[in-house]
Amino acid sequence: MTIHWCGTGLSSVPGLRRLLALDHDVVVWNRTVSKAKEALGDSAKDIRAFSIDAVTDALQPDDILVSMLPGDLHVPLAGICLSKGAHFVSSSYISPEMKALDAQAKEAGLCFVNEVGLDPGIDHLMAHWLVANYKSAKAFDPENELSFISYCGGIPQTPNPFKYKFSWSPLGVLKALRSPSKSIKNGAELNVNRPWDAISSYAAPLETEEDFEVYPNRDSVPFVAEYGFDPAWNVQEFVRGTLRLNGWSEAWKDVFAEIETLSGDTGETRLKEMSDQFWAENAYDEGEADRVVLCVSLKASKDGAAVYHKTYVLDAFGDARGNAMARLVSIPVSLAIEAVAEGRLGTGVSAAPAQQPMLDSWLEAIGEQAQYMTVVDHVRKPGIRFPKRTRS
Image 1 (cartoon, rainbow, N blue to C red):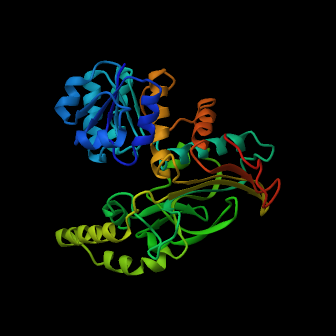
Image 2 (cartoon, one colour):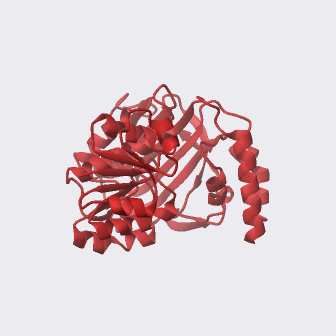
Image 3 (cartoon, rainbow, N blue to C red):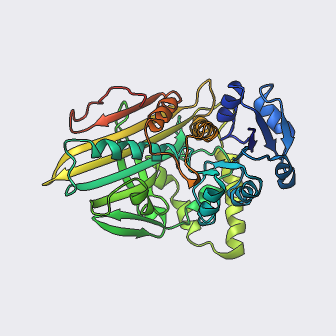
């Protein structure tokens, strides 16, 4: 079994290096071989120039193809895996086109694993842990009112005036700002056309409580079922969102105003111009530390009082091991690859696993990549971390 890792951009290197250090049989594919060699040094013995035809020719039955390439290549590469009898792994969201391959993958006995990066990925693991923990708690009652939030953001460790820095092209961030979102608030679906129409404040229970700005992201509603919420449960709030530094909305208000006016080809051209400008003015400097904050919380209330309320929190910084975002995206991908190779994941199209003990082992490995990761129990000891520090 050979692992074919496609793409060696910023979000790939730590997980890829981990697999190479563990002596897995890995072929590295990149559009520019010299850039891959620069990123990996002497750790990779087999680096090849990426092309669809070359990868197709190289794939063998039971191999694992990993796509860390742009999203529009995931489904074509997964289709090639079907034809060659190979497994597929990516960190990206499961698109409708990817989901449509589920029956064929199951029939062929293949694993097509997606959503195993940071967000989506680690957030899923934390959500599954919390739901399982709540179901086993004394406070569990199907009649409880439930509130679920999941906020994740990559932010500069040292804030800049723009309240944000870019690790890669800002174009994706700008396009995401034009996307609507759907979540649940006060027991009903909440539809928001633009993120800046729903910005709110969030006090993150980190080692020192810290305030951030947050807004809903994409469509949260399908994850109610994905995370194992019973359809009969009384869900009053359910939102997966993006976390930003305090002051971000003020720093970006002119960006929001201009984006609102853009449309058609002219608008796309202007977005590209804005992206180039932001990349020039607000990219991370060489060696500058980034930061990732992730908070996933489940609260159950009865008669207006919280009977269960826990938050899984993660705070990670760039350090000698490299960029925090890269570690937290690619290390879970490497764990998924090993799970596929060992036959520990089901066939078909799937996301990050919910089953224990795999859930616990993944969270333990991810905890090693963060400076702080813990479960805060707000009911047992309000305002105090319990346990103080955990790896699972």
